Length: 365
Ligand SMILES: [Zn+2]
Image (cartoon, rainbow, N blue to C red; front, side, top):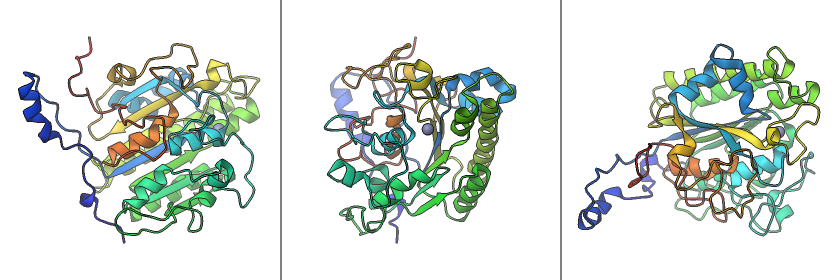
């Protein structure tokens, strides 16, 4: 029932730009057009502080370090500007909208959602997501989560509440082809790996809750050997299995990009509720896979469009934004050769560069 991947038109017909560049007297060689990939694996590690990985080091977190060495990353991305809760930030990740304001998704509630609530009923209008765009183009989607409250996504994008598909072939209103909730992350990962081996999803969100759960029970204690750090190491081992899958499956190898981020960090003693604590609002953003340059700093790759925020917490009104967890949705769509989510505001221009220099950009110093 899905349309062939090749039926999706590339977003930019790069060769048509060549004569224009010659007319303008530019002699810079054009970078190779970044080919679209067929699969994006979006991993959200709940409550992951980027400095936990640094403290563990290569020996303690070899797979996170592999993502750093072979991919592009920053340890200084940002959550939503105003909310630090798990659900609000995951909704930001999948809709490309901040929480507050007219253009925001407005879902600041982090509690278990009532059974009939949807993101749309809460907002008062339909909230399109990455699941809509991918699914409406005939590609497959999945959400594997370790927290029951993520059913707000299933409730919002099921066969009753998802929007009619008006793009090409009608792929139906149910935008999430496979939804799995399992609290045990090891089991969740095995379910995910086996589903991917059976038929890989073009876009999948894998949510691993362990660091957050350990953080709430035993504080975000980044001393090696703490419960929190042990949970980060469990996630590291899971990452290893995920990387092995991508590399060993002929359908996935070389045609997949993995994007890893977090919904928030956390602080020893105050969990992750205090808005002006940089340990709460600082999150990692890693990109690894097909055509992603090795050991690249995402802020250096994006210095024309993003501003490294230091220790600050810039509002959405800042002219140059930090890299945010909310960049992931429209980035994933761009990687899949698809345009942005209708109504999204974060990375709507799909200008977060993760595969080398943008055309015309000066080389890094
Ligand atoms: Zn969380």
